[in-house]
Length: 280
Ligand SMILES: C[S@@+](CC[C@H](N)C(=O)[O-])C[C@H]1O[C@@H](n2cnc3c(N)ncnc32)[C@H](O)[C@@H]1O
Image (spheres, rainbow, N blue to C red):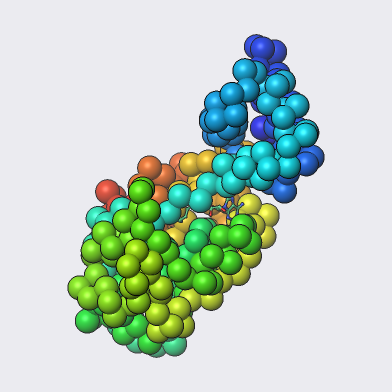
């Protein structure tokens, strides 16, 4: 039994949530044990409300008989919220870091890991920023972008994004001096140009169990740690640490921090932006 399942069975009456989590474990291609129970509970509750299920038992029965609901739940559990230049202050603070890395002599390029990358907007933002900043040599920048979700990676490789009621892509690209140089726009649809794509490679990767990449100059791990169960946080963080070369940089999400056991090795470059230098 996973940690999340065990925690849900705490005898205070939410054992039905455990039933749903166990169902997910067995019948939905998702590993609930990685994620914290509060997060799982919220996502499941949102689906229950949507389907008018009065309690967990009723929702579980619905999952048993309804293929589409299983798909919808999988969709809801996969935390795929992202954006171009998400947290614009961070991207502004990142420019000097990128300039420094690109100017470093004696290295054959700047290796970046975007982990996790969701639908590609994070690694494409970096690729665009490198080309947009006159002090960065974008030809030296190589980005490996990974995610556990094949569906997200598929969308990322296509590189087509649409303005909707909740997402204004044109607005997301505002930090660029000349967005048209990086995306081809047709009405509400934005296609990432080949020049931007050429610096990014996408790969499937499980950041909890696949281990470190090694030798990276810059690692982004934004907005995943917040969902991860405490049991897996430290190992995940060690994976990040072991992927960065000494002197390289780490960027976390706006509400994420370096775990206490690793703080000595990471000095904040910009605390508000969660950019850290790995001292080794
Ligand atoms: C909220 S998005 C973050 C995307 C981007 N870093 C950002 O901040 O905008 C979280 C992503 O983590 C991915 N993910 C969840 N568990 C993962 C794991 N164990 N290994 C790799 N990626 C994972 C999800 O598929 C999702 O695309």
